[in-house]
Amino acid sequence: MRCLGASKPLRCYDGYVFDLDGTIYLGDELLPGALDVVTELQRRGARLLFLSNNPTRDPAMYVKKLASMGLDVTLEQILNPVVTMSAWLKANMPDAAVFVIGEGPLQRAIANAGLRLSDDPSEIDVVVASYDRGFTYQKLQIAFDAMRVHRRARLVTTNPDAYCPMPGGRGEPDSAAIVAAIEACTGAKCEANLGKPDRLMIDSALGMLHLQAHSCLLVGDRLYTDIAMAIDSGMDSALVLSGESTWETVLAVEPDRRPLYVLEDLYDLLAPR
Image (cartoon, rainbow, N blue to C red):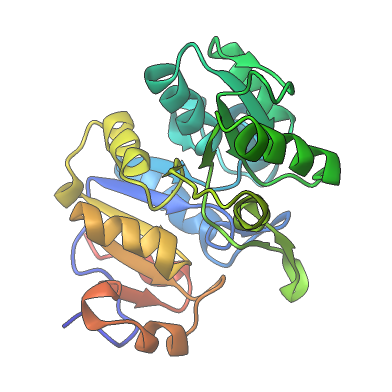
């Protein structure tokens, strides 16, 4: 049975994997404890990695955003679906013509990985459905034609999030909404998710940290992405109640799908040395 009371971790970890949106910051504001905790872990010499399922920024943009908030983070400490999607396509479909329903950073990363972008339904091999604030009916039509009319394209997504949390309790429709629209009109099913909680994301994170799962703690605010990925990989997990999740949502899941720790804020994260 996993714990059901807010508690601090009982030990220090060699590596810490932090979700960003809803855990380190919300919008353009750091959440309570983020600066102090990250600074202290850096002082202790822990290896830190920052994960996001948001594909509207590339790693360089995240470094700049975090720096503006006072956090000193390098490119090698950022991982998101812009990175994993590009790597997966290059490894698995290097000759594919790719139609990206997504924003500039994702499109540029896929092109820079050597993939060919196309909006011609007769030649599209894979449709990448992502968080796209410029989503239009025309984009949906191209995906429909590639998948339903020409019956040649596969559907994959950067992340399974239904919405992206925003300050003030707002949210923006995320990749799952785009996937649902395409599935509804084509009858196809999304074949791969390259964000959390996909195994590729955590394997990539551990490779970047050069650590084993049992040596790390994942800290996030979502049960079905952050915590699920940690549990499935054998990594300890801490849910912080600063984003999407509440005590009610924790109690609603099966005991073996609960986080090891439930934290009111990031200040509860630090274990005594």
